[in-house]
Length: 328
Image (spheres, rainbow, N blue to C red):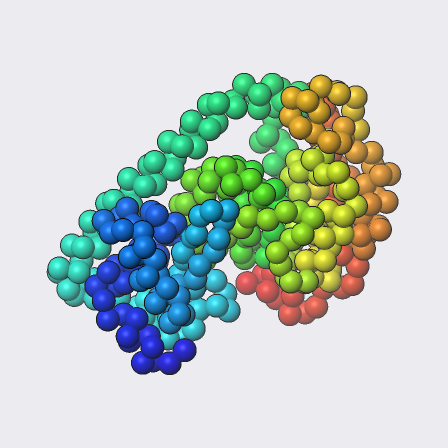
């Protein structure tokens, strides 16, 4: 993108404020309109100019459109990075601009509070159902610790959390991963996850709406794929694992956390479970067919339902560059 296009895009005080807000967190068009006190069509026109100049990125999630600064690795141009530094300096030096930015951030705090209240309300509506299910297996903290131990000392690198739900796994692995993409088909769950993860830098965590049967990523993008309490919702688990394998780099890992085979038929009706858990031989066969070498599973049998952790490694050794990227 030419410097002339970028300068023209910045020649408006509203667009300068939008740039500072996007440097804070990913925001929906309606949320930006709320903060700026302008109509949504007018804000959309400003956004279009910034996106055309390469200073912002759009991402659709159902009927919502989200905006973020182009700060993900490989996406931000040197000019865009220079603009971000320039605006930070301008806020330090220009008192009027600083006051406007501070007021925008105050309104943004109200939006964050509203997101968290919405998340609390959603949990409250479903808490009884989830608590009933949790009482049937080992405590979450023990499962999480066992998962970390099962993955070992190798860092997760670029991690895809399929079926992120509330975003807990993304939150758990954020300190260890190079970058996390948290994917879920449900818009409600993505909004819950966004509230949980909004304290994390936007360049470290990205939320994406998508289906585990048709992942919206090119092949060989990730070092680690995680399916935490997700596979039992799949009509065709083999297709889910094949698609997960497609987006993994050679030598990458998949971690499946799910229930061992059980006979609690009521979970189909109460919690929409399609599969009543999995046997070790079944998962080993599924992983093998999808191009993985399975490791011995781990089991947590502290309840009526046994939680199993299966790890598979994508066939083909990791390259020296991949190992270096994982440790970056």
